[in-house]
Length: 120
Image (cartoon, rainbow, N blue to C red; front, side, top):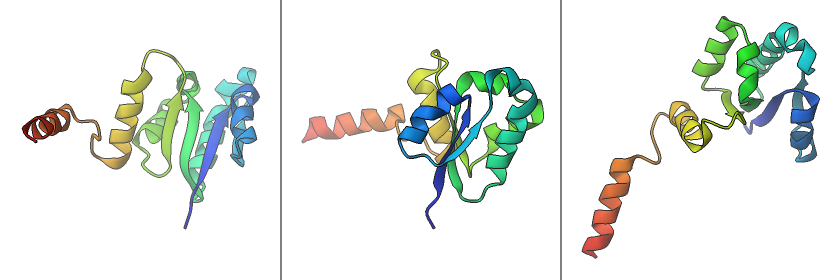
């Protein structure tokens, strides 16, 4: 069974995803995030058709503690946060590691691969 991508956030954030073909969208206006973002995230968590949920990193601050913990612990759907600047590639790396359980970019693997190539 294939799963879908969902996007949660302000209409300005979700529009690009909709144009790219994402059909599951939870729009929450910026001035309503403190009141409505928890419900939108819980709806996505409960949707069995969603495999990946995308949010803006800054929106995590609007979530209640319980919902934020659910997002951080969720494997299916896997929540991916983008934006926010500082976390960059290392933040995405941590999210992938949490989702699949291994670090695909483990530095030890890179070193052993370099040693193998040098020996050839």
